[in-house]
Amino acid sequence: MGKEERDPHTGYLTTGHEWNGIIELNTPVPRVIYFFLSAAALFAIGYWILMPTWPLGTTYTKGLLGDDVRKDVTHAVKQAALDRAVWSARIEKESFADIQKDTALMEAVRETGHTLFGDNCAACHGRTAQGGKGFPNLTTQSWLWGGTPAAIAETIRVGINSTHPDSRTSQMPAFGRDGMLPRADIDKVVAFVRSLTHPGAKDLPADKVAAGKALFAANCAACHGEDAKGNPEMGAPNLTDPFWIYGGDAKTIEATVWNGRQGHMPTWEHRLSALDRKILALYLVDLRKPSP
Amino acid sequence: MFGFHYRLERKAIGLVLAIIGVASIGGIVEIAPLFTIHQTVEDAPDMRVYTPLELAGRNIYIREGCYACHSQMIRTLRDEVERYGPYSLAVESKYDHPMLWGSKRTGPDIARLGGKYSDDWHVAHLNNPRDVVPESVMPAYRFLSRAELRTDDLSNHLKAQRRVGVPYSDDMIANAAADAYGQAAPDSPQAEGVAKRYGKATNIRAFDGKPKDLTEMDALVAYLQILGRLTDAAYKPMASAEK
Image (cartoon, rainbow over all chains, first blue to last red; front, side):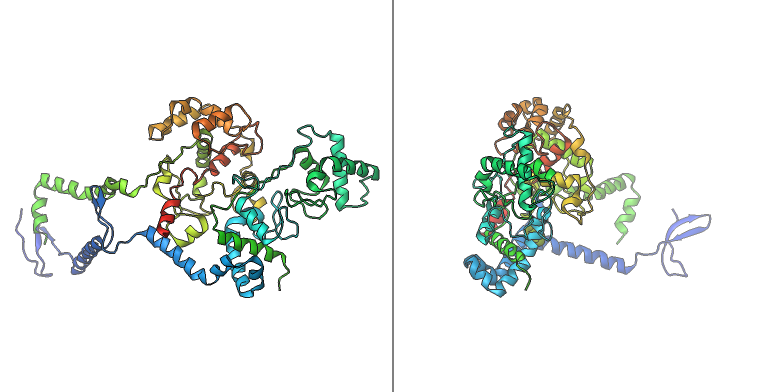
């Protein structure tokens, strides 16, 4: 081990090591490093005091600020609800008809309803609420369970064929698969159903349609009605309008009669608040109107 | 300032001990919080376990890499709570081995997906996401409806989960294959056993619409329909904080 000497050029000490006449400078750590090191240490100490940090056996230091992200988010959600309270309290209280008359309230419904619809309903019914195969179009006048705001709000609450105890239930039987009607009769019924929306079509002979009409009266009218205009009490669709959930072509109608249909809409009672459901019902009724 | 260090450098054993001491700080910082884990992880006495069919669906979820685009973790942020539902609790992943929280959201978070949409929607969406969500970039998984579900190894999957702490009973392990079949075939004799072993709240239905065939589609939809539904614990802290 050599001797530590002061280097004449830099004024710093050497390490005292020497290799064949080469000696090594021991340049001190720059002051700025000491500064940041102590600043970081001071920050850490401050953080330990203010925030929840150290575990202490069965508990932990809670910190002077009592910071808790769970409390924060609950507070933020509550605060947001308070900010909306100006209009949301009125929507909660007032009747559907009164809200629909109030343009300012309906503006809020359109804005909030659009977001709620996008987050929750759009996956099935589409972003523009026009539905798709198997998922009803909500922009038509054709509503299985009634198109009043109250009826729509109730459908959203309990769902259709859902797990909710008050669920709306409609199960169209599988007339073909379960042997209630032979294939030839189903053909006739399908011809009659198609004749409702395509009167006088060439591939629908009058005698077949007439036979189908008799079969329809005996088998289908209980739910769909004598005039095939449906029944919102039972969720039976109107077969005389141009709107179809699964499709109105011969093949699809035949598949529907053969296999039956048990559409499913989930209940939203536990996922959406009463206010949210009311806004959605109003939003959907508003969608059907031509824009002002 | 470095006087102590200079002296330490000259003692081999002392330097080794000091290196071990400093290097273990990182480990202690990660391990010590676990000493208070009972404080931070909530209790959920009502927690249910995954049925064999749901576990098989979970394995398909892992196999297909769904976690690369979908997270299962609702963070404590207002926009997430308002969009997806109550923020996720640690206890909800108690029986997740491995956990599938994920860290990237190309698709939406699915921690509370269970019961949000119908089985028909899930089947249509997995067959071709564009059919129901035109702007979707998710790949189509048509083959799931055609792929028969492998059930002969399900007992072993349950056994492996029990090793790491999931309370499956011997009865559950012995009947895993039959229970997987019964859960997707509501009118079969096997269906009763599922309700008996896993509770009345278990979804027992033909998830892909075909009760006779047990496909990978059945398993995956069964799993997606249980997400966030194993316990109601997450709904309690939000409700009690509001009071």
